[in-house]
Structures are given as C-alpha cells and as structure tokens.
Amino acid sequence: MKKLLMATAAAALTAGTAYAGGHAKEVKLGILFGFTGPIESLTPAMASGAELAMEEVTKSGKLLDSATVSSVRADNGCVDNGLAVANAEKIISEGVNGIVGGDCSGVTGAVLQNVAIPNGMVMISPSASSPGLSTMEDNGLFFRTTPSDARQGQIMAEVLNERGVSSIALTYTNNDYGKGLADSIQSAFEAAGGEVTIVAAHEDGKGDYSAEVGALASAGGDVLVVAGYLDQGGLGIIQGSLDSGAFDLFGLPDGMIGDSLPQNVGPDLDGSFGQIAGSDSEGSRVFAEMATAADFDGTSAYAPESYDAAALFLLAMQAANSTKPADYMGKILDVANGPGEPINPGELGKALEILAAGGEIDYQGATGVELIGPGESAGSYREVEVKGGKIETVKFR
Image 1 (cartoon, one colour):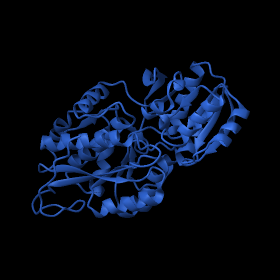
Image 2 (spheres, one colour; image 1 turned 60 degrees about the vertical axis):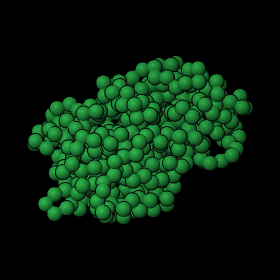
Image 3 (cartoon, helix red, strand yellow; image 1 turned 90 degrees about the vertical axis):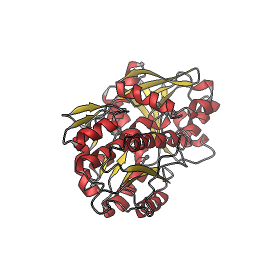
Image 4 (cartoon, one colour; image 1 turned 90 degrees about the horizontal axis):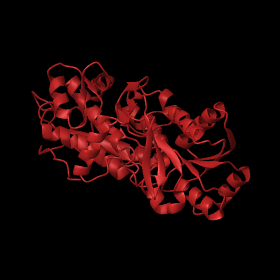
C-alpha cells in the first residue's frame, strides 16, 4: 500500500498539541499489532485496513484544520507482554493521539493496564476478543470493533450442532484469549447437549505437539476444536493430528482463520469449518473493493475491523473538535451508533463534513458497527469452511 501523506511541520507534535489559533496539522495513530508471532500472517492486512481509513481522511482534507493523518506501527508480538508494553510506551512518546490495538487479548490487557490508563490514552482494538476485557477497569479508554468471545462460543456451538457434531475434543492456546474462548465454547456446547471429551491447553512456539495430540486422541471426539493461533501452536496441533491419524476434521475459531492455514496444511484440511467476526453488509463489500484497489485483501481476518477502529478515532476527534483523548473518548459511542446519517467506507469525508456542521452520524463502516455496553461490538459472524484449499464463507450469523 502507498505510504500515507506525512505532515511537513518542522517538528512532530505531541498528542493533543495545537498550533496557536488552530489544531495540530498532523494526527498520529499508533498501530500496535503482532507483526511477529503466532498471527503474523494476519497483521499486514490489518495494518493496511487501518491505514486505508487514515489515507481516506487525509485525502478528504476535512479533518479539523485540514489535518493529515499518519500511522506509527509497532510490534507487540501478539503474546509478548514485555514487548507490547515497551512499544506502547515508545509510540506514546512519539506523540500518537490514539492506539489502534492491541490485537491479541493478553497483550491488549497488559497495555491497557500498564500504559494506556496511566497515560490517559484511548485504545480501540479490532480483534482482542477475550470476555475478560469486557469487565476490566479501563477508565473509559478501551473500545473494540470485534465482539467478545462470549458471543463466539455461542456461535461455535450453533455451527457444531447444525453440522451434526455430538462430541468434541477442545484444545486452546494457554493465554487469556485461548482460555476465555475455550470456556465459552465448552459452556455453550454443553448447554446445547453436546459432549466435550477433554479441554487441554497447549503452548505456542513448540516444535513437537505429539504429547498434546496423544492426550486429545485418547479422549476422542467427532471433531477437534482448536482455539489457538494459525501460525504457531494451532497449526502444530492440526499437523500433528493429521500425521498421527488422531483427527481429520477440525473446528476453527477466529484465531485459526487465515489463508496461511490451508496453505500450510494442504488438502487434508478440506471440510474443516469455523467462524470469524464478519458482516454481510453493503459496507463490507465497499471496503473489500477499496482494499483491492489499495493492493491488499479486504476479506482477510480483522482487516475490516481495523479500518473501522481507525475511522472511529478520527470521527470522534472531529465530533469533539479535538485530538486530545480526554476530549474525544466520550464521542466514540456517539459516532458509532444512531441516530444520524449512515456512513459506509469511502464516505469518511462526508461524515467529517456532517460532524463539522454539528450534525449526527451513525457509522456503519466495514462491519456494520454497533457498539454496546462497555464499548464493544454487538457482533455478527461469518461461518467458513475450507474447500479446495481455500477458506470460503458459507453463511452469516
């Protein structure tokens, strides 16, 4: 994707700083994703999604006093709290006005508690889905454009039941995301009459998962549900299961959905299925077309949610007439929800004009945005299945 336009001010402006008589001419949004680690194949498209919204706003010239928007990328390793905290502190020192991120739930919680709250910095995550984040004390600074895994567990139970699955073995990556999702899947599936034969954690980054696969195989089940990450532990569990003949059909929650999984596993993955947050909206189709024009895959996991996260920041700043987190944080729910003019991708300039004139918008975005409760997505999902080595959407829920 083309590099974003950069401001020509002689010195970078710190968060919320303004020129005399006007607003800052550059707005900086941090992008704090796991560019290395167990979901590294997903984050390039996620970052491009966020930067697409920034570029759209910059080109419109409608944000505050024709401010330009630039991104500051930083790696959190997905599961490396120390790296995540250090890099969050670094980008705040570089003057970001908000943070798109984190992506994985554990690092997101660590950054929220150790960096965002002490610094009064707003975070909007496109993908951190742990139910624990719903109740974490956040001083009103944390939002997410993806639904909680409390909802995903219900969706997975529905998918399993409709496919005639009566028993599952369940493994999860041993962190906040994996444990919260596994608990949700187990409770929802058992409540619907299904049997969970085993619930077992696995660690990411191992070279051999034969012991874990052996325990899962001994417990048995119609399907092995892998609540892990597609580039490390989850992939290793699936490959080990196929190599040993332990399982040949897999349930794939959101952390396992991405093109690299069928590419790495091969045709034996065909028939496996799962779900990921997604919307069958006009906005999702528009975003996919915009992404194609910008040379990245807009259907990649959490790329649409990343566009929406960045857009919400910029729209809230316009509504508050300020780039200061303390000023705009209270406007995020206002611009995300009705009443107001519906806004799709490609219409951010229009939205900024409406807000500048004192009007109201209902940001729909790429994912049919509706924020509820503590500032998280109400949640719709797309059911997917691996067919011919490709992940295909078969239904929306």
